[in-house]
Image (cartoon, rainbow, N blue to C red; front, side):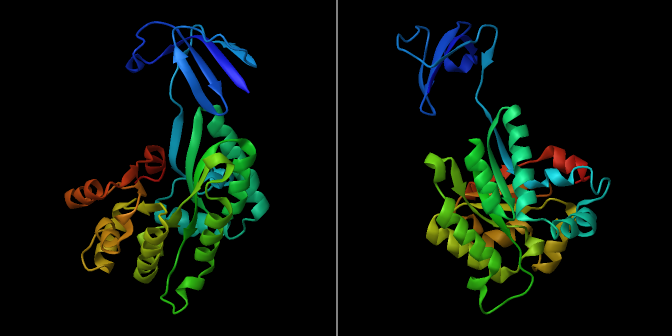
Amino acid sequence: MTTLIRNVKLLDEYGFGDKAVSVLVGDGRYKYVGEAEPRIKVDEIIDGKGNLLIPAFYNTHCHAAMTLFRGYGEDLPLDRWLNERIFPAEDRLTPKSVNVAAKLAIAEMISCGIVSFSDMYMFMDEVANSVLETGIKDNLSRSIVSFADRDDIAHDSRFLESVELVKNFDGAADGRLKIDMSLHAEYTNTEQMSRFISEYIKENNLGMQIHISETEKEHLECMARRGGRTPIEFFNDCGLFDTRTTAAHCVYVTDSDMEIIKEKNVSVAHNPVSNLKLGS
């Protein structure tokens, strides 16, 4: 399938100034951009006159299937929102409900010009199948929580689900689907699990998605729990940032935290709407 877009404007940074250009797309790639129109047979022609062609948007942190919970648990701070409403509701999720909710989220993202999203949740094989069916791109991860040390940590069910996701879906659909690992947060994981996952992602060249310092309460309670270390300092000590990491929120971070983020090349997903909704 080849598509020619005629007479469309590009952002000035691409060097065409105020001139209209032609853009040729085929096999999922941009094939040509220029003032002259390519003289080849195409399957589709779009008149772009009066329109501006810009890069697509990327959603760098979400929980797609949580479209099911819109309007539920309103006007609560993060810890109450999670513990009183969301965690109990999530216990009742099914693979089918996650599949349907993910498709709703994907449809909304595509309609807003979003071509790729980073997602951490549960029943992620269902989300992966939704991604393959709809044509969007995704960095997908199964969120891991742990509350007690254990001798058989390598047999943790959530970890094993993550391993299966990597095995079955990483690089699928010509690379549209990438699988990361995910620790939910500092307050939902042990140091043992944090260090174990850090080693695993380094050994297997995988990325990490994680919530960090989303609220002041989380930040201060971590310091009390981890010998004065902030969440950023704690996870840095665990070796988590030795591979590519997307850290969601980072609302409360210190100057030294920001130095670690810079040194380790951690990508921060700011999530301003989420932070405003929960009063973070």
